[in-house]
Amino acid sequence: VTSQRKHLRDLHLYTLNLVFLFCFYLFLYYVVLGFSDSLNGEVKPRILLMGLRRSGKSSIQKVVFHKMSPNETLFLESTNKICREDVSSSSFVSFQIWDFPGQIDFFDPTFDYEMIFRGTGALIFVIDAQDDYVEALSRLHLTVTRAYKVNPDISFEVFIHKVDGLSDDHKIEKQRDIHKRANDDLADAGLERIHLSFYLTSIYDHSIFEAFSKVVQKLIPQLPTLENLLNIFISNSGIEKAFLFDVVSKIYIATDSSPVDMQTYELCLADTHEAGLPYDKESMAIIHLNNTTVMYLKEVTKFLAMVCFLRKDSFERKGLIDYNFHCFKKAIQEVFDVRLKVQQNRKLLSQRRWSKLTMTNGVIGNPH
Ligand SMILES: Nc1nc2c(ncn2[C@@H]2O[C@H](COP(=O)(O)OP(=O)(O)OP(=O)(O)O)[C@@H](O)[C@H]2O)c(=O)[nH]1
Image (cartoon, rainbow, N blue to C red; front, side):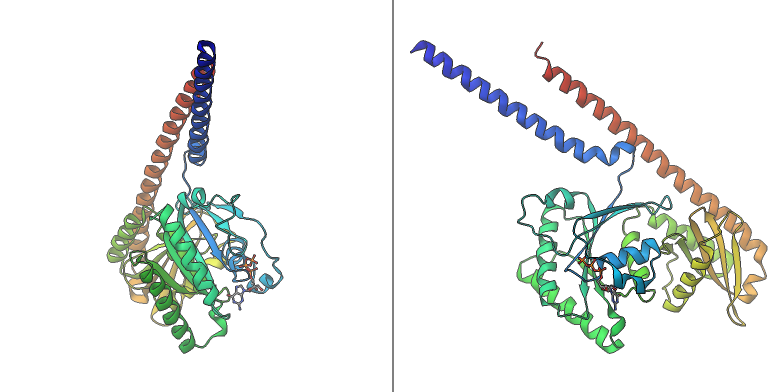
C-alpha cells in the first residue's frame, strides 16, 4: 500500500511538472509572439481590411499603395488567404495592412482572431454600396463586436464603397441608412459606446485617398505636433492651406486646422502624382492656378512633400516663405529624431527582456 501511495504521489508530481512546463512554454510562445514586431524596435500599427467577398478590399489596397489603375482591378483574382503587407515609405507612415479573404469564420479554430485583433490599430470594413448590404451589415456587427471585446482601442472605419455608380442624393441616402442601421444594431446589443466612422469611397476618384488619409492619421501619435507646426508655418507665411503628403502613397498625413476643401485636395493629388517620380531634395513646383491663387510644392524629406495654397500677392514674399519653410523642415527633423530615439529605446528594452527570458529558460531546462 505504501509503495502504491508513493507511486501515486510521484505520478501526481510528474503530472504537475508537465502542466507547469506546458504553461511556461505557452507563456513564452505568447510573449515571443507579442514581441516579434517590437524586436526590431518598431511596433507597426496594423490596419485590417475586412468585408464580404468582392466588396473591393484588394482593389483599395492595390490602387492606394501599388499605383494600380482602377480599371486593372477588374482582373484581380479573389483573395484566398490573409495577405500582409508592410507600408513604411516615410518615417511617419509606417504600418501593416492585412487584406482578408472575403468574410472570416470566427468559429474556425485555426483562425486566431484574438491574436489578430490584439495588435490592430484600425479595422476597415468595406461595404459594397452597389449591392444589397443586409448581409454586410450583419457581418459588420459580428466583426466589430468580436474585435471590440478583444481590443476596445481599435478604430472602426466603415467604407461605403463603389459609390461612383450612384447619384449624389443616392450616396447621401445610402450613407444615412447604413449609418442608422449599423448604430441601431449596436444599440440593441447595448454597445452604443462603440464608435463607427463612415466614409463614401470609390477607387475611381480621390475619395479613397482621402478616407485612407483619415484612417492613417488616427494612427500617427505625432499628429497634433505636425498640425501645430503647420498652423504656425501658414500663419507666419501668409499661406491659406498646407498639406503634408506622403509622396509614395499620395495619402496626406497632416494638414493645418482650417477645413479641407475637396477641390484643393484633388489638385494636390494630381500634383504629388507628377512629383512622385524624379524627386530629390531640391524638388519644388510653382503652379499659378488662376489670377489670384498659387500652388507651391516643396520637398520636406525624401518621402514627404508639402503642398501650399496661397494668394498671388502673398507669394511675392517668397523669400520669407522659404525661410519659414526651412524652420519647419528643421522642426520636422526634430520630431523624426525623437521618434527614432523612442524606437531605439524600445529595441533595447525588448532585447533585454528577451535575453532575460532565454536565461530563465536555460535555468528551467537544467534542473541543477
Ligand atoms: N465600380 C467600382 N468597382 C470597384 C471599386 N472597387 C473595386 N471594384 C471592383 O470590385 C470587384 C471586386 O474587387 P476585389 O478588390 O477583388 O474585392 P475583394 O473584396 O478583395 O474580394 P475577395 O478577394 O473575393 O474578398 C473588382 O471587379 C473591382 O474592379 C469601386 O470603387 N468602384
